[in-house]
Image 1 (cartoon, rainbow, N blue to C red):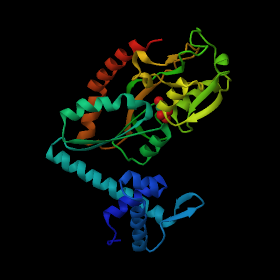
Image 2 (image 1 turned 120 degrees about the horizontal axis):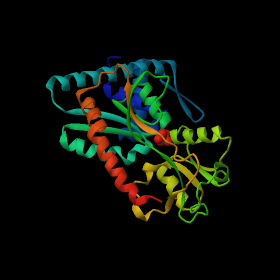
Image 3 (image 1 turned 120 degrees about the vertical axis):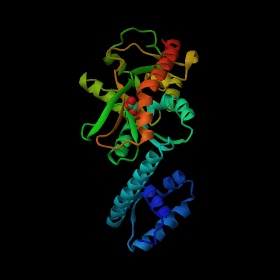
Image 4 (image 1 turned 135 degrees about the horizontal axis):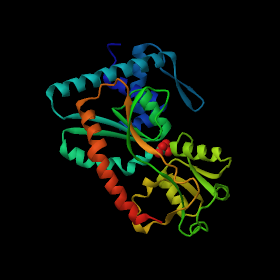
Length: 312
Ligand code: PGA
């Protein structure tokens, strides 16, 4: 294994994580043949195949699984080493790895601005993804801090309340229900529904509410993006439930309105979490403090300013 290069291990880990050569190549800014070649050379060094292709799916072989676990340990050790060195230097420099659910993209990147200006030596890697994928990252300890709405119960984590994340029903401005008051859930589910993809926390929360009230939505369309859903609503394809934060960029020109529906908004919150016992680096600790104090105040001020404008 001494002949294997660090680069090859990084490439292999990305392919294994995405179960795809193409997506790994995109992430690493490499061509697909380069990625395949690196994995091939690594398999040669190992002396066993690392992946097997069954139909359209790429699976890790037993040797691949062993190697993936080893890679993760190596990367974790290196990142701890980097943290230790940065802490020894006492400098706020290095990398901050954040993972946050999709709805936070309307808030977290804005809060990073002032933080990065204050600490120009810090590079930030922010992954915006859905609930299910974020939990996978958390389980594998890939990032420093995680921001999500439904903290998992089966992972031992330290959880800190960050901000409100109300889920509202959205329709196009000219929808027949737009002017109605206190619409019942029964009436609501007669409308064609646009839902976030399976694995989404928003979808889970909506499903839970509907199940509790014994109603069932007529889902016409599944979409994996809040922005695409907003466009679909504006295009008259149906109604949907999204975080109120997704309206942040619309201002007064919004083609969307919030419907007045019983049991809505679904009151939810964003939490900042990290695995219990995880040693936060100076950088992660500094950002954590910033987020829960100044960051929170900035976000609340921004939210109030925007949502007074977009109030139905
Ligand atoms: P989602 O999460 O992007 O998985 O829907 C959003 C949320 O839980 O608020």
